[in-house]
Length: 286
Image 1 (cartoon, rainbow, N blue to C red):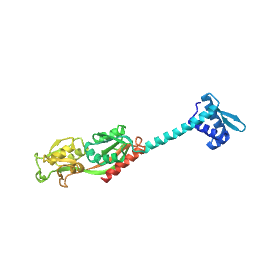
Image 2 (cartoon, rainbow, N blue to C red):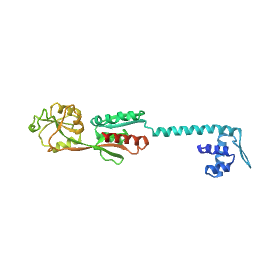
Image 3 (cartoon, rainbow, N blue to C red):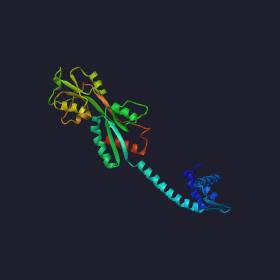
Image 4 (cartoon, one colour):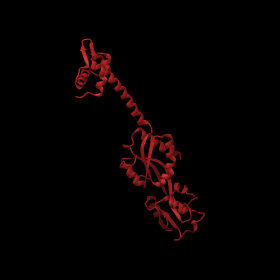
């Protein structure tokens, strides 16, 4: 049987005390156990390390050399261990955050600059797609964290709510009067890939000609410049370069829930825990 790390530790204790019984007592093991450890070392090196007598033990020349090298090894080991522990608690390393492009525009500019200033060793990469696809990639270990709208519950997924948003119909009242919007002259722009769009189209009266875009910022720009109405989240509408206004309260709305999602088994270290805490705090303050 090959010697172990503990065998070297026991040898140093024997070298210091010059007594097998006292060394065993100080290490909290039996004398036969410490004698067996010394035997493993001597067999491994192929030479005697100790001269045994009734009064205790003395180190051979080889034993003296092993004592000096073992002390250096233990010091190097402690330095290595402390460096690894420090690295595991410092905010560094690489993480991938996934979110819808529109979500990215009102969340990432809030959190990323602050994280970069506070934790310069942190490296962040981003993936942008529909929220349901981001969720799937988090579950499949492709993405570390997701900022996801209305995530589907999954047994492997931890979901932490950040804030709510409202999806409804928006207009530019300076150009279009919603009091005269009946007929096919009024276009409603929306993203057909979003479940919120599908829900709203079922609820609203058939007053509009429906046209599609898969980019919410494009829809907001079209609405702002008088091309028609748009189904938009409030945070996207409020970021428009021109003021947008909700239609009257008789129109249906859908409530969005923005959540931070991750796999607990993949994000259970100290750095991940600190990173998700920072993201939650920064977005809740926004």
